[in-house]
Image 1 (cartoon, protein in one colour):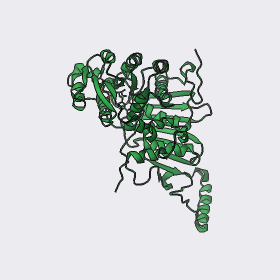
Image 2 (image 1 turned 30 degrees about the vertical axis):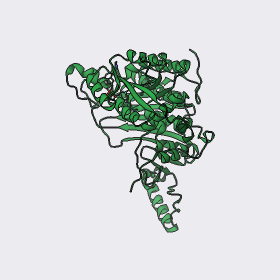
Image 3 (image 1 turned 135 degrees about the horizontal axis):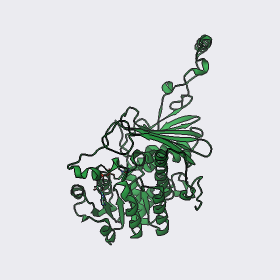
Image 4 (image 1 turned 90 degrees about the vertical axis):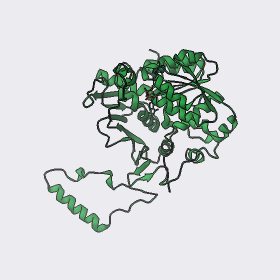
Length: 439
Ligand SMILES: NC(=O)c1ccc[n+]([C@@H]2O[C@H](COP(=O)([O-])OP(=O)(O)OC[C@H]3O[C@@H](n4cnc5c(N)ncnc54)[C@H](O)[C@@H]3O)[C@@H](O)[C@H]2O)c1
């Protein structure tokens, strides 16, 4: 029978049980917020949260907040009555606002969750921090890199708690995978190939044509950066987390080839992010074919990790600690004979023998019995709540989130401009290999 992941299992998988904060992996310091020794101290506390934009994602988050006994939802704000009606079913006692600035004036609100369309994030995030609220903003952080940088600086200058909806930071599969990667199990990570393929229009049903742009904001450039900001940031954050390196440049291309229904954003995009040492992360998304699904293929010289699938593979075929023996002498001889035969042919040759993954069996990141019951969103919300109570911003979370958004926005610009772009020095943080330089 498949096993449910208990809170204890979750913490154990992340190396948080029985360990002091000092022993936490340096690359996941934000997990400290959920360490037993810290969460025990905040029992009985209550954070009062206001939700701005309780649409599809906003209500998903509301259901997670509801499960946290240290949080209550005291206010919601939306401009669309059906969203308000649905949100009130989750938080019936919440005060209702139609103007987010009024919600921000509410002294009973300690922290806000922003889950509005992308183009609204910037002003709402800036105003929230200025109003002294702790901030959880859905991804992507803003509509331009300059805006993302402003919000990050506002977070720094106000000293508020600041999270973005990058739930993979708390997904047990990813945490465990990163622990393995950073221990050197797969050698040095040479490349990350990330993709997200779907087959769907990405459209919401619209009860009246006058609501088309409001409800299908994702499809219009004025409000959205399409597949880059809606899907790409999750995957790119994983890529740089694995490599512990931020890109210098990006080039990209995109097109609208299938969903020609009046939308403006591309339905296929590809980007190549390059590091200063020549390693690369690629990101690709197509929404007219879902065969290959979603994955970040993290490739080291000794092995490959596919965290979404929950698998890893060694180049030498090792499974559960057992490395396959080399082919028996007779088989080897047959192979050599075959190779000689092929060498005589006018095409290909031994060096063209395909080295394929099909013979390599996989290992389970979380063990064979692991059943996925969280994608990290619950733990991300829980960590936010803990941080608001303790007023302690977990290390590196703001920077990881900033870069996830900044990278996709730079990729978007590269696609739109048809140019290879360098990550602007004035929008770099002093983080990992990046150094900020004023313009
Ligand atoms: N982290 C994730 O995995 C994840 C998943 C889905 C969506 N998201 C992000 O969440 C955000 C919202 O996406 P969604 O799918 O929920 O969109 P949505 O359209 O379903 O919801 C947006 C809500 O915001 C409301 N809104 C619009 N303008 C407003 C305003 N001025 N004031 C108050 N409310 C306003 C809308 O009426 C709607 O209820 C996006 O940034 C998206 O990228 C993140």
